[in-house]
Image (cartoon, rainbow, N blue to C red; front, side, top):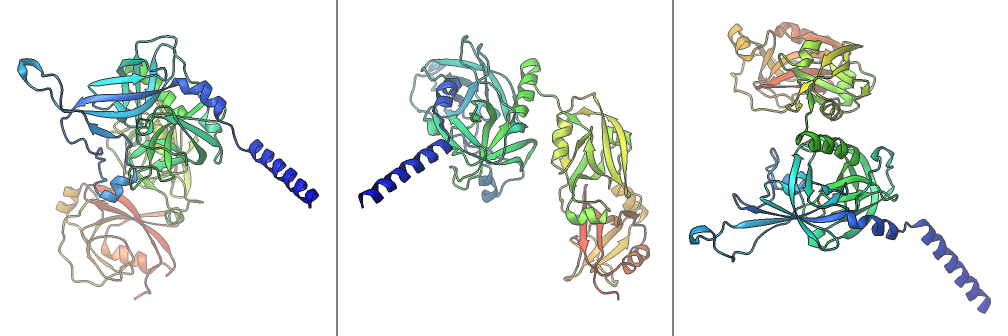
Length: 480
């Protein structure tokens, strides 16, 4: 019996040693890098409600909570000394966030939303010293800000390469959640290259590291003690941590901070196209080998893309030699190109790849296709086609008003319609197996549909208001 107990004890001890050998030890990392992480508080006059910042296009409460910026904003004390002429000072709000020192002479990196609208910024070091900071520059599109304090000989972080970061790798966050300074949390990289709503220029690092209000702007370290990201956003329906957090990759931050330090702003490229994602069905319709690239809905007049010969219905599969796997890749690649630079585009057009050259212009940013409410149109008394819709030809005046040379207007959508279109939409083009056909008459359109197999996959270019988009239909009704 004693022998069995001794063997069991030895087995447990060995197992414990194996587990300890496999689990990471963060103590050295924290000891070496923790002093470079700072607490940031800001003060600003209350000019409007200090509620959660509003995000355009995200008015729905559930959607608004999806990517809630995590800065606790609490009203400051109402009591205090009186202002000039005996008037009470303006009410103030305070924001709490994190940051980290990137150079010994006092440059600090944080999130743009941490310092946005601040009248006064205070940086607190781990040794309790406090400094007033000034904003060198902030970039809202990547949510990065560079601030400066008047100090020297400070501990500074070193950057790592997020491209070498692997999914499943351990990472550590240090920050001030709920104003608990230098709090350390750890987890793993859950995914890389995440695209988030309203965020076109950042391929986020997703982790399961516990991030809460106040962590915003703090560093994300790999186990070598290198900063690989800046903690920026969380997925939350409560405002607190729910297992998903997102960090801005260090290489994106480095590129931005260099421009902020030099010019106080970030210059980004633009080519002037409206794009949408290429689905599997769209790829089939356009004769592309697989779902990849960015489908061009429209080209801005006078833009670099138009001058280079880019056409609506082109699929951009590469920009300046770099593959465009998803439509979200294109704004990042174009935005990261200096205005005035020459670049190449590889476009898939009518079953073949074509290479174009253009000169990149400077922002405003790329847009994506959006739906707008169409103008009501009168229904036509006619038979529905194999899509379950009725279309009519446009008058010369209607074409001029819409600035199009061809197209058919949808006048009726039957309950069993196969096409996801609305009354008032204008159909510009039909794509099938890589063949592009401009729609000029009802007879032409219905004959074209009648000639297709029941299982055919087609794509329609649809104009709705000022926006255009490509709509894919898989399968048609039986021939009438």
